[in-house]
Length: 151
Image (tube, rainbow, N blue to C red; front, side, top):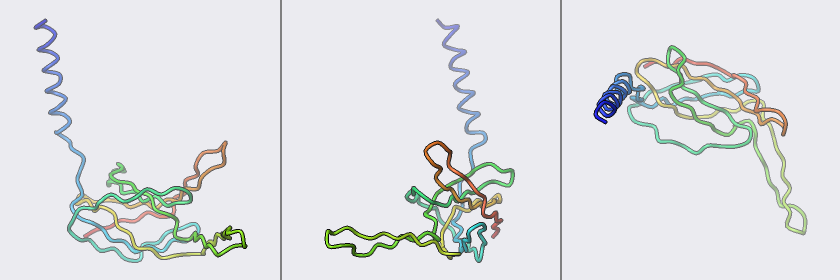
């Protein structure tokens, strides 16, 4: 029994040490971004770095954008989704039966303000558009822009 327990304890101690040897980086600040989203591109208009920690936000379904923060070597550090700001759903009072009319308007471009965690060791911010696929096709992903944010 001792021959099994001691090697198992040694292995667990080694794994615990190894997992703490290279911890994933933690964000040191928040990057406030002003972006202009077009049909096929995204442009960074302004970025401001402020000390603090970013709280998680809600996830969105449907046509949406994905914000990714990647390390300088391409490792995914953080990701979140937000609704596509170019798509606006308008509802008006409908008929006498209480049904509402719903109209989807797609703007050529829209400006948004958002925030992402800022990591001291450097980072790349990617903006992607996800479009839901049909029942038999996967979700389509399109890269709109890649930006470097520095202090």
